[in-house]
Image 1: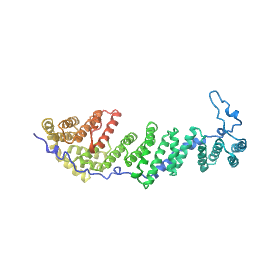
Image 2: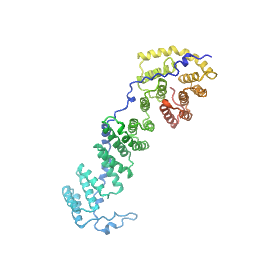
Image 3: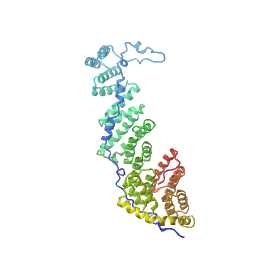
Image 4: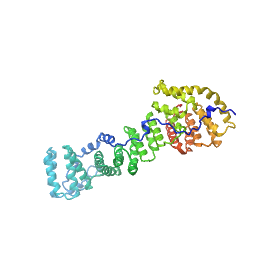
Length: 479
């Protein structure tokens, strides 16, 4: 039997993977300041909604007959309000002064009405009229106080209560009153508020407190449960954004991905959302680097599975990415893969032809290439015959590196039938070869069997296969 030493040399390297000092591989700092500033820059549509509450809507019923009188066909007039005769006089005077833009007199008359207000209806009308004065005079404190007073009466119609609670929740969040923000925003959400900005704010009300209690730059174990409670709201916000204008989808998905990792929640869903929201190569780089960072004990060969995905997704973005890939692949073990990688890096302008390490590795790969290519057919023949499972899998990997995907798929499957020791590695080789051929459904089926340290990487390959099959692509790019 003749099997090339180059094909099987270090075919199952267990040495630790070298990591580039890539910023995306580090857990980000979770300062709430940037997100608070971002929230405060949102268009305050809520304030505009408040401005539509006009004096007409606060008109005082003259008597109960008028209050109960039917309006136009198919419409009901406002319900009867419990108003005393003593209350009516100063309140009507306040309305008259307001209509004349005499806000000082309007406020003074309202204070008279407030002093004798006893029913919830009277207190509600005072609060609403005071709110109008606050809007006209740009008195922010008055607006906030009177919205709170109106809600406290329990007389706000459902739609108005949603608007008021949303407004107060945003104000509390910007002021870093996270508990208050959660109270108001939760009330709005429970009453039907599905605006993605408000759902994002409700999520941030959870994240912000967890970050603050953890020291302001991270999320510790004690506060992780609180932060994790915000993720479902953020997910709804992102999904709504993806179905709409997508303005904030990418940044919110990235936030969710970071929080999910920090709280040790399931980050797979967030990786999917990030990749759907940000179709650029940077998202794939960030997701793959995060998985590597969260699994620091990957061997060189295990890390190569992740780097091959990064290459196929077009996400190799720095010279360090290429150096790490070259080291994991091995210029002598996989010379054709390394040479093709270097050529791609130089063609893209990311890798410099004068880089000493790159030049050294290119020379090593070039000197190994001839024997590697010449002996590979014999290794394939023997693997289809009596070669043991280890040699068969090493040959499958060599074929994968040489872009002979159909044969790589065949021999990886054959190694599994020979009861190869490293079944997870065999399934990864088989699945990657299938993805490279555009066989996305078979690849996803193969990847379901991957366990152990490679399982998180297998999930990423599954996401990639989902993404490619959803786009209707005929085949994935070569790597």
